[in-house]
Length: 241
Picture 1: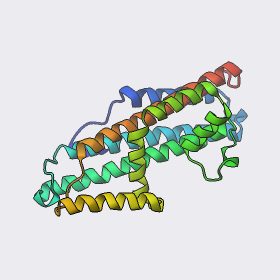
Picture 2: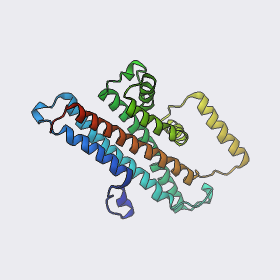
Picture 3: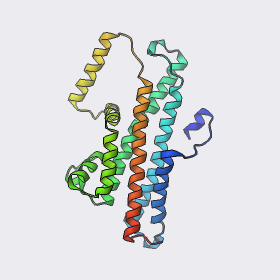
């Protein structure tokens, strides 16, 4: 959809998003082997959930792509050096970059709630309002679904620093930031301002590298989870072809 803004054709899925979508579609195909009249409310919920993941991954990839494309027109370090056209590109880059960040954590939290329900992890007994990372911590500490947990935990650890930076930015955007972190961020900004009165643009290349890590983590986490659930469903014989 967003590629139309650049006069480009619709995306052909390749790479990580293609493999994540394939894993979801395989699981949905398994669910659809249940005759319609025999599907229970849980089966129907999982079908709705699976389709919502397909849409969410598509929207994330498009936001990332648009941010990258608009970043190609940004060359100035300082905002007041930008001409009118470059400033428009910069603002559009920021819009889609921030949109992608918000979508990263929305998808992860959706995945956490899906896993919590699908595996009956009871994470809500640990924390009433929980995130994907709370679900992982619950699985890790209580040795639940160890094979899946290890893969997701290792993925989280390998992506920790970039994803933490993205999470801080997300929190700034949606105003859910603790006072200590806010003080740290404001102090860092103030110190930078003391050294240079002019307003700098974001370091676009560094931000996009972090964004790439965050998107990769999402695609791999979704693929890994749906592959595991699909294999588990087949092995238990719950869904019959």
